[in-house]
View 1 (cartoon, rainbow, N blue to C red):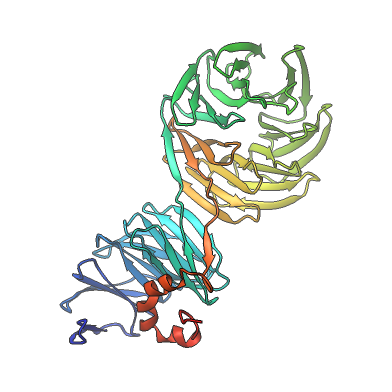
View 2 (cartoon, rainbow, N blue to C red; view 1 turned 90 degrees about the horizontal axis):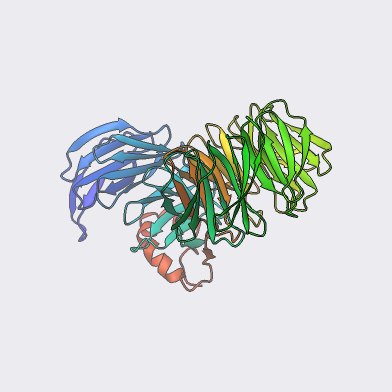
Length: 500
């Protein structure tokens, strides 16, 4: 390697890499230089030419290096697919999963809080400072060549082997924390108008919050852990289920209405039928009750061998799905007839939900997976990312996004093809999830007693194919140094960043 002044004067020649340096990066202030080689080794240098240290960093060629603006960290990308983040002195801080087939480029954002990476898999990924995957940006039809943030960090440019430049405006997820419960929050549910949020906790209370995260009221009456909370489809009532053996009805304003006492048995969940006439109740003893509060009638469904953990009505109200500790998802008719068993989970099935169109079931369980089933009973897909129990699963109101929450302290958003859209790490186990009906927020109930509101109304990347876009000139201006320094790229794509 050779160091030059801007005027072209040779300052230093740095020798040492056996196969030649492929990637180099200066720290902020140019006090330090990092170089990476085809054999996966890193060398740290002073700009005076003094070698500080050499170490093996990757199992494949190191293709790119990026320093954070404060000079305290640098990231490396490699053909081994991994992304690694290091302290300035070469201490390994993080290993990120990166990109299958090879990670081609890494770039810190101007504030150092976001790291962007590009790969052979044609995607751009955004990571937060803790190593959580924030978003996957899809649009290139070829591998990603390079990345560059705008100085304000609001726009990211990427070049690809598809001969396009794309501009992205990454809307990072915004989390709001609701504090008030003094024990784990078991469940959360938005009102149909998306203006209220109800939460149920092991502290035996239900809390009502407005959309601005203000605590409106605390509902008391249960004498044991709250396991589920749900608004009536018309939004005027709330049903709650508890380990104290009761199901309770409340007005929207929090006034108590009615109680059903089912004895000394834990009630795991309660849910309204779409026609609002019945409440389905999941019990610890394997029984499902159907309660009509107006008539006082109570029907009983039997079939699970062990606790029933969750229930979900089909949108048309003609079917009821149940999740059990016997590893089964069961589908029932409204007349109480068992229609079908869904087998595939290993261990307890913790949650089950219908898709908005009623054609698909989504389940999550102790085996760490979420599964998509056709109503006919066929396993369509298994979603596997979590490393611990999947406690809750949810479809978004438009049916295009799936949320899964786990004891591994993470929430993952998926599209219907099974691809990860976003992933976020929480401070404790995730016990409950609920999308707002307006599709703008996801409420997350956690074991540390807090509720997180995640703004997810911008799930999909804003991208522009810039072959004919007015921003083309701006993007090429950002990338001109890279292209000038890499004539091989220009030879491969002679029309890239040339006026047409």
